[in-house]
Length: 254
Image 1 (cartoon, helix red, strand yellow):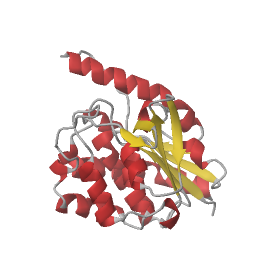
Image 2 (spheres, rainbow, N blue to C red):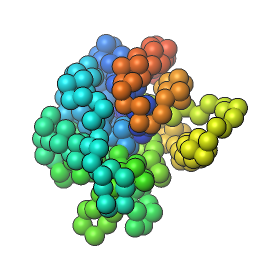
Image 3 (cartoon, rainbow, N blue to C red):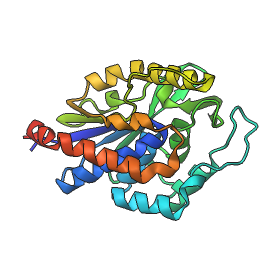
Image 4 (cartoon, rainbow, N blue to C red):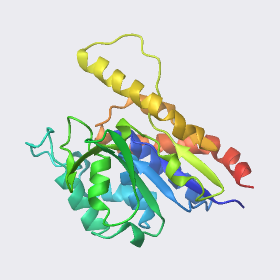
């Protein structure tokens, strides 16, 4: 059987669908040889790369009270909120370790705010890179590393499949930002969210083209980025989408 690498898109709360997809892969004893991820894809990816099963991650989210998944303290550094809760969560359940210590090689994508370019990280201490990758602009404060500021990788490369080329025989992508047709917009916020979604739709095209198969749970479009309390529902959407594609994927790996 051929090997495969797994790339996971960003998408805020929609990213819980990644766990459902990976749960189905596990039922078929399919384990990636490498993982890449942006934003929530990076968060979900690091737990799996550290050896947690998808259901373990769901249990962690339940135990840690999901509504506090991001620390709700105000930030004065370029965002509304800070990310201390995520830092503490990663330190508690994985530890302040290096990428090289993870069971599965992991690459995460963050946007260099100074250069405007996406950057890929796969070595050294990982926590700040995960936090940077998931720092949604205007919501969370930028992460400073050295003399550079970093934000959500989804602004530039929301499906970093390019990090996986040559690392496996095949690449499986999971994209959780399905762009459905919208009839009307009720507010300025609706328009803003739509603009963000369309921007992401464009920047995932290259990454998706590198994948041998993409699983895209379409119903995740019904959930906002910060609907974190809906994790169980979104998880099940990922499972359902993976079941529809699993036979096709197994044939790809034959």
